[in-house]
Amino acid sequence: MGCTASVLAGPPDDKHAVTRSAITKAAANSCRTHPAAVRHSRIRYEPIDQFYQFDENRVIGSGYNGPVRLATNRRLNKAFAVKSFKKKRISSKKMALLKSEVDIYLRLDHPNIARLHEVFEDDKFVHIVMEYCKGKELYHRLVSKENQHFSESVAAETTYQMLLPLKYLHAHSVVHRDIKLENFLYDTKDEDATLKLIDFGFSKIIDPSRRMHQSCGSVAYVAPEVLEGSYTNKCDLWSLGVIVYMLLSGAPPFHGSERDMLVSIEEGVYDMPEKRWGNISPQAKDFVHRLLLRDPEKRMSASEALQHPWIVDRSSTVCGSYKIGNEVLQSMRRYAACSHFRRAAMCMMAYSLTSDEIRDLKFQFWALDTERKGVIKLCDMVTVMKDNLDISNREIEHIFNVLDQSKDGEIEYSEFVAAMLLNRVKFHEDLVRDTFRAFDLKGTGKLTIENVLEILGEDIEDADKLFQEGEVDDNGEIDYEKFLRALNLERDAADSHHLRLRSVGMIVDSAVAARPESEQTIGRRMSRVRSISDNVPLFGEETEVAQLSNRLAVPTEILSKQPDGLSGGRLESARCSEAPTTAGTSFDDLVQSQTTETSATAAAGGAASPKQQPVGAVVVVE
Image 1: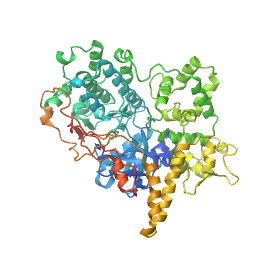
Image 2: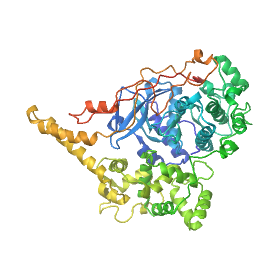
Image 3: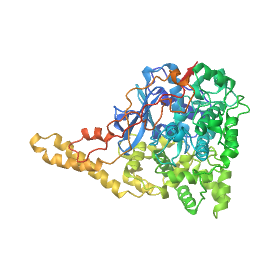
Image 4: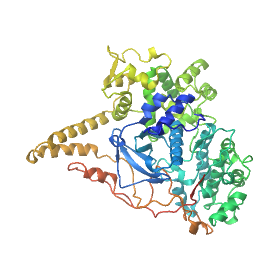
């Protein structure tokens, strides 16, 4: 993290210009991930349809450059959100934004940022495959509350979760530039779900000593200095102040016609009516005031906001009082003793795990990240582990250096997760096979030392010690069974049984398809075996969006009214959550129509709430 190079374009006919830009910058600036590892673990130049099943009739969100669709990974049997771009339809300016989004998203690694799984690029499309957040937007949860506002304690906790990724971004020289209610999603539908930041389409890697000039964002949230065309990352804190104002009061601070809104924002003029703010504490009001200061130099930073009494004194449900225990130390010791190859494989797997699968690891991470930087520093790790465990400084430093695979003096979230996986996660066969395939560059079913070095980088330390004794055969190769033994992972018996059933069904179906109709009875019966093993609920309700709103239109008929709440408007944003628009058939229905005589019926999609309109519209001014 922290690279400041500008977007590098490939040659005019480079069909992989978007992702090649990210790799080139990683190589040129010694960023946190080796370029070869980035290319082979999360960037793919293969048709996405080979790996993901789409429901083409349904979108789960809309973005500045197109829809966000739900897709199922064929190997992992997991749902992901896919944001797709048709490269020939977008202007050079939008292409620059797309390159920046991919470059930045590949760098980010934080518990409160929706995870990037992988990126596909061919000559026509770029597909960004993201974590699928099953909960709704922060906006939807807010307007569903009585009087359309949160209690003060919930608002403080929500604000804390929004500040964490902002502090992380700003510490790594990234500004989001489109902070709004619609760009925070809950990872589940539970009341204590984790809030995650999405949509890095307007984000930018900046030089902290220089100011930005491009005006972008959403009208209702835009900072006055952005309208003036000269601003810093403090613009994100103004936008956060607008959100917190709405969380507490149920109404936006700036309203009226577009012209009236812009005048009020430019002057930094807003009020706190007694009707809505009478029961709000002085601390909460002070917090909002210090974010909505007209002068960005006087405005709180993300770090300062996290130290404000209103945040410090909240009743926390996020980090709790988790203490580092002996099981964490044992996991780290086991991981430190692994070969370089084994650790690299574990890191690849860490990026493929969902939030649900690593939910408890988040609390262990926060216990070591005492300053809430989104990374673990050596000084924090020494302090916490010495206070809780019987361990020497020398061993802590050794463990830290092993976990810090990028050698940047920080342990990123996924690096920590990788170290915890051996004891915490029972691996499914599909996940392991997917990692094996990432190493198997030629698709031979065997790995060679050359394959692995090409991915990890030939300049890695102790390349001659890449593998431990017994991890390779006499020919210097690793087949899948040896790969499994090298990782020392326990097979999931139920998952293996599921794969065998599915494989039998597919083999029989293929054979029967070539036979006359009269000989296909046994094929129909055997296909039911496959159908039963395949018919597993993949995800919750999905809905169908009949029409995307005009992203650049300002709904003046909404904004010209004095707000009685927030339900008058919202923005269809680039998001990876379910969009509560209109009811639709379930994804399983589509699968059922493509298989032979399935024996189970799919669940129908639930009723959806009426379509909402935007609080503020997107502004892009060159």
